[in-house]
Length: 247
Image (tube, rainbow, N blue to C red):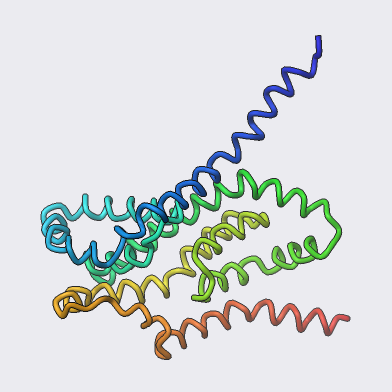
């Protein structure tokens, strides 16, 4: 009898099953993009706004929990409609509560996809990078030396897609605590902007218009965000200058 066969049988399934969560997320993302992109829209929100407001007024706690749960699913499975959800938070709950609910839901969803990716593909890639001796390993070491700053920048720079900022850190093995911390704080500026747009959404709908998400790129909005980006990059710049002086 082969004494190693039970061990092999128990190892292979566990090695395979750890990829299942990320595989499910990717499949759901594709299915969701195909089936939901025409439903998770501002038109749907406009058509159902009176029913949503009535339900919110009658069941504010349940509406809040349902909103957070739906937004969590949208982020965790990278479904279309994250911007619509953020604006809806302001439309239903106002600036303060809406921002809070948006940050909570988006952060939980981001952490879920991070953990799923790290448990599967991320663990494999991190191990391969660790045993390599090339540029990739040096890049990983540079990232780990500036983890907080890099993660903050990924959250603050509007040009970085949200799902990329969720997946990429998991694939290169960053610490979960740093990821969670920078996610919660880093998405607050953008969440405030989108929630703010949602606060005035009723008037926009009454005029027959659609929300202007380009507000994020207005100088008075993008200016402070770029300022935060500069602050996030400052520790890396200081380290680089000190390193050159030591050389």
